[in-house]
Image (cartoon, rainbow, N blue to C red; front, side, top):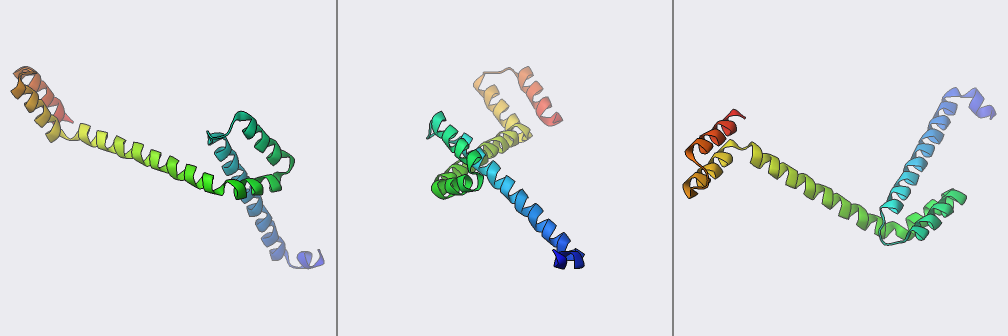
Length: 132
């Protein structure tokens, strides 16, 4: 402790290391709990057992979970990321289709040619599409 008191910068550095290590520990804990609650391959009792293990022996429990379930965690994360990306792509496509005035007018023209809508309805759709 004598060295740290004679070098205050070293004490600040050590405090920062401890703070970031604690922050990383909390982050890993949240990742483990999030993965645990997201899992569908184990029962509620299995989840409860993992939670009790992590609470009773925090460091050992988290490290054992990471070692035992690392492959499953990766697969679940990749699967979720693909689902989110697919939803985003679908939303972007639907938003682009809705906002494209040319495609809206072309669809309305096809409906007019088929006799599904009247000329007045076509003009209304065309006005809406051009307005924005």
